[in-house]
Image (cartoon, rainbow, N blue to C red; front, side, top):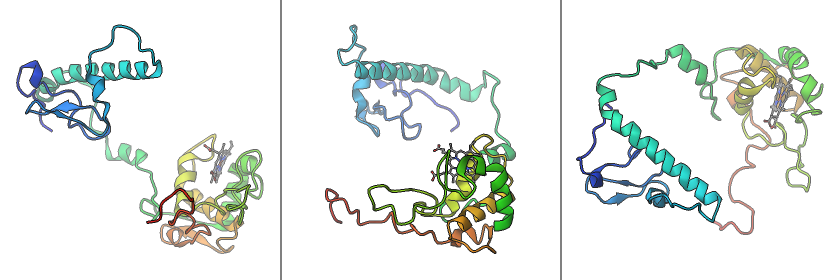
Length: 244
Ligand code: HEC
C-alpha cells in the first residue's frame, strides 16, 4: 500500500476508519458510493452518536463507548495516513530482520510443517525429562503437581475422562510445538530442537506409542500415529447436532 487517501472531501463521503484494512475489525463503512457496507459483524450501531446518558444496559454501554473510541482513533489515524505514507514523520519502527521473524515463526503444524532440523532419542529424552519436566509432571509423566502427560487411555468416553498426550492428543507434532513453545513452564523456549525432539520421544515412549529405540526428527515425528487420531472426526455423536 503506497498511500492512503481520503475519498472525496465531504463528510458524508469520508470512508470510515479501518474499512478495508483486513478482516476482523468488523466496522460498518461507507464506500465511495456513500452506501453503507457492513463488515464481518453487524455492529453498525457503533457508528451512531454517543448517548449523553449512560446506557442502562451497563456492559453494552461500555462496549459501545469503546467502539466509538476505536472509531475516533481510526479517524485520527486516517487523517494523517495519506501524509505519513509519503513523508515518514515519526522515525520509529523498521522492517524486522529475517532472524527476528524466525524468532516468532515457530509454529509446527499437524502435518509436521515447521519442524526444524535436529533429532532426539528416547534415552536422551529421559535425561531431559528428569532434569526439566519431572518436578512438575511426575517421574513417569503421571502428573502431580501439574497435568498428567501419560495414561488415561480408554477414559475419554467415561464419566471421568483423563485427557493426556497419550489418550487425547491427535497429533504427535503438536507435542513438539507445545513443548518448544511453552515448556518448561518456568523457562519456555529454552530447549534446543534436539532436546525437544528427545523429550517428545520420551513422552511418546512413556505412553507406549513409540518403542525404546525410537528417534524423532522432522521425518519420523509426523509419521507417529496417535491413539486418538480419529477421535475428533465427524459424525459428532451429540443428539442435537444434525447429521450431514
Ligand atoms: C514449573 C512446572 C513445569 C515444568 C518444569 C514443566 N511443565 Fe509442562 N506444564 C506445566 C503446567 C502448569 C502446564 C499446564 C499449562 C496450561 O494449561 O496452560 C503444563 C502443561 C504441559 C503439557 C500439556 C498437557 C496437556 O495435555 O494439556 C505438556 C505436554 C507439558 N507440559 C510438557 C512438559 C515437558 C515436556 C516439560 C519438560 C521439558 C515440562 N512440561 C516442564 C508445568 C510445568
